[in-house]
Amino acid sequence: MDNSCPQAEIVKPTGGGQATWWGWLLLVPFCAAFGLLAGWGAVQVAVVFSPLIVFPFLLGLLLGACLVATARMVEFAHRPTLAVAALVLSVSAVLTQHYLGYREACQKVEQESATILLAREKLGESVQARLPLKPAGFVDFMCQRAERGRVLSTAWGKWTAKGAAAWTTWGLDGLLVVGPCLGLVILGWRRPYCRECRSWYRTTQAGRLEPAMARRAAELVGLDLPDGAPAARFTLSGCAAGCGPLGFRVSWEGASGRTDPATVWLGDPKRTALADLLDEARRRAASDRSPAS
Image 1 (cartoon, rainbow, N blue to C red):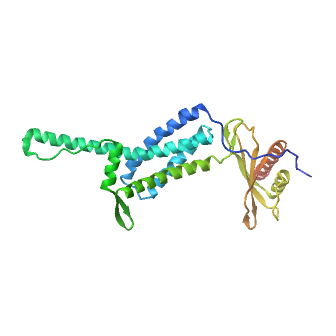
Image 2: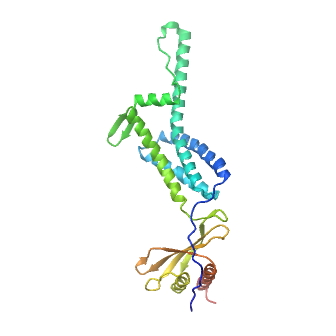
Image 3: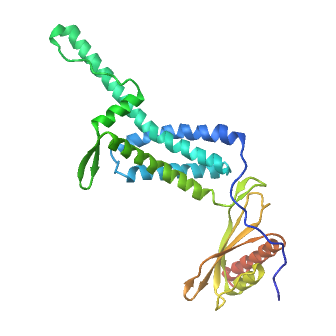
């Protein structure tokens, strides 16, 4: 019996949605605010755990994962907006860490100045300590830090980077945050996206097909069946409304293990025929598991 069904050529749905006003007006500002929070959290964690290179890299991965998860939840897939959001998120997290250092330095100067002034009121001119100079601004603070040097703890000892070397290390730290964040977002937006119902593709069904059913499924969707008519594991993926093509991913289970999985995209009538076949396979599996009467 031939289970094949003719259908027009189905093209794999591409990623990338349409630009929306709320994407720019809500998602990007949200990423800026979340970056501020992440930068504050990174400063707190860095007190107890801040390995060189590893720490900013992990921070970038965490930020990218959060942005991808947010895009999935709100069903947003406009790539330029996501790229800008990733840059805003990671850059704001990096700058926040430095700005918090600036604020801490200003507070320290203010406290020291208050202590000296109080001592002068009580002891008079015998207090010779000079009032510390407060940084003129954030940029001035960073320049002062670069002049004093940044101490780097490595497996080979401690090294102090001063001047241009300090700026270089900060730049590398920033790239180690921005790069993984943006890279993870780029990998995330490669998932198929339906522009009709504006939803990401997600797994709708998964299971195992016995050899006979696997052979029929292969004939139906036009896949080459490996020797030995093995069993197969399959995954169906579709959009939220089911208006796009259906993704059928199958990996064959033979005596020598699984082969490379194959994915085909199905429209009607093959999608309906495959659904009927999988329903039949599920009924047979349930019947085999039920106790004999």
